[in-house]
Image 1 (tube, helix red, strand yellow):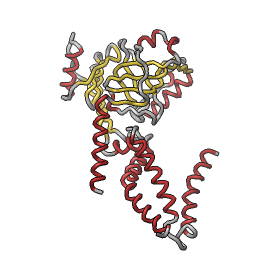
Image 2: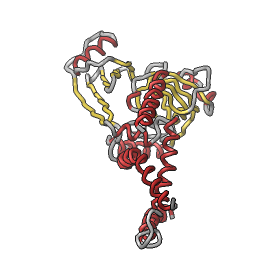
Image 3: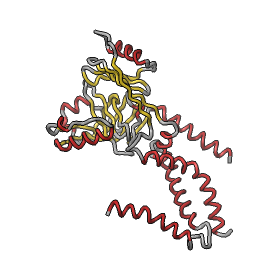
Image 4: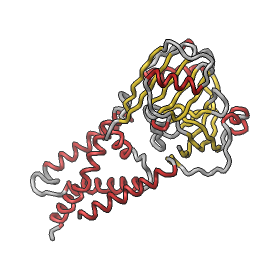
Length: 184
Length: 154
């Protein structure tokens, strides 16, 4: 078999296998690239209200029940914490509720993970570690192969000896220019 | 080919189930056999600066943007310590807030000047969209924190 034909077959099959991961990495890449402007993993909803009253001489447990009822929170309490003599924080799955005994202010912070996007970000940033590290390594090598083999798929005026060369150089000049601009 | 795809899918599914049974592990494996209470760290800070310690407590705050730090409640009322991890090496998800953690890290002493604190306050105000008045900072301060190495959240 001619080497170029073999290269095309390998490029095609590696491309099929890498398609899913490339899409995941591309979507996540855009998401985490703008981390300064938004939270790519979570939607955080912060609300604030002032209660009319709080039970007097009540235990922490009684206040917790009272506040949960007042804010309409029905999920199970994970834990509670007193950050100061006047404050109690109640942790519920997906919600933390901060109560101020003196001002009767209740601040809620509801956290919902962004479906699909959080999962893709976790994989992209190698949160699972372990076996995924090696999967991501293999993927990186596959991308390297796809990039290099892609250069030699076709011959002629559109190949690497013609138009392909100029386009490849443009692709190299773009990151190089930015690197020179930012670091020199 | 269909069998291969199914095999790969089931293998991953099985691995992830085993993974979730012991609590969620972050970073390096815990090595110390004894825990040090957070109140003890604050009581005798000089004794522990630069040493690796293991602490246990409730996660009361998680870095919203990068999951690069958490605050752990102390055994003493109204006291807490920050566990800072290297960006991207360990990422704590927001869901861990309110859960128990056993963590290991190097106890660090951070000395901030007045100027450092103003810069820090302005940066945080910008990041979280809150207000900061530099006049509230009148002098520098010394802070203690843990440089996180590994943890288990249950």
